[in-house]
Structure formats: structure tokens, C-alpha cells
Image 1 (cartoon, rainbow, N blue to C red):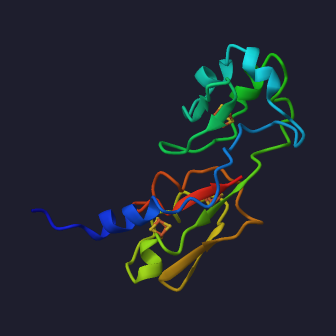
Image 2: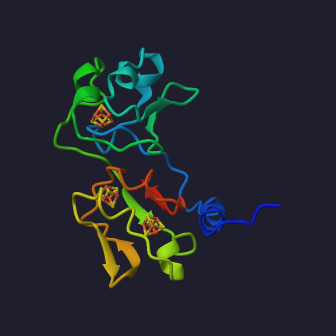
Length: 158
Ligand code: SF4
Ligand code: SF4
Ligand code: SF4
């Protein structure tokens, strides 16, 4: 019988981190956007996304999934959005990332900096070697830290 690893243990804890169920929508939509137009749209944003992070739910409404990458702010989804749901290049993502202290290995005395390097906004702050937090006023919600966390401790609060 295999011995459970620390990573596996904290990954299992990560599955318990379900603080928020509101999906992250693609960038460049107004705060008031309902995404109703998406339901009768062909969804060109999905194939245009250079990071392959746009998906659609059963109704056709797009959402971002950061399990493989983050949003590069490339504007490709905005450029192909014919109904102009995505139309404001100044309005980036409407959410920020948060670390679960329960799931994060660094909050349990294991050295890990996997999330720090991809954060170009320096939004992830450690206290010495441990206990990272994400500063909401610096985090853009880009999601690049999420797939790199070995214990699935980072979620978007949309
Ligand atoms: S800005 Fe680029 S990377 Fe971000 S969701 Fe749109 S197409 Fe994808
Ligand atoms: S979502 Fe982006 S900006 Fe926010 S902490 Fe992660 S890498 Fe940094
Ligand atoms: S990548 Fe960051 S959030 Fe994830 S376990 Fe390591 S220190 Fe914690």
C-alpha cells in the first residue's frame, strides 16, 4: 500500500476549499453584463483564446477555467466577440485570487514558493519563508498562480 504524500494530503484538503461558486467570466465585459447574448452566439472567444482557458456552460455562457493556464490580457476574445459582450479593453477580470490556509502547504510549515514566481503583479506576499497571502488590491485575477499550486490551494473569488 502506498503512503499518502504531503502533496496528496493537502490536495485532498484543497477539494474542501469551496468558498466561492461564482464562475469567473472572460475579461472586457461591463460590470452590468448579463451574458444573455452568449446563448445564441457561436462562441468564437473559446477558439480565439490563446491560453485555452475559456469554456462555455450548458447555456452557452462563457467562463474561465485556470486549471492549465491564466489570462494574458491578449484581447483576442474581445476582438472576435461580435455581439460586443466583451467590448471594454479597460475592464479586466472581475475577481481576485485567494489562498486557503487550510490547504496551502506553506501554512503548514512546508517550504513552497510555486505560486510566487508567476505573479507579475507581486500580489502574493510571504511572511519570511511561510504563510503567503494574496493582496486583493494588487491581484488582477489573471489566474496564472492557480495551476502551479501543488495543493490546489488557490481559488478565484469572483
Ligand atoms: S484575454 Fe486572451 S488569454 Fe485572456 S481570456 Fe481573452 S483570449 Fe483568453
Ligand atoms: S491571480 Fe494573478 S495577480 Fe492574482 S495572485 Fe495569482 S498570479 Fe498574482
Ligand atoms: S503554491 Fe502557494 S498557495 Fe500553493 S501550496 Fe505553495 S505556497 Fe501555498
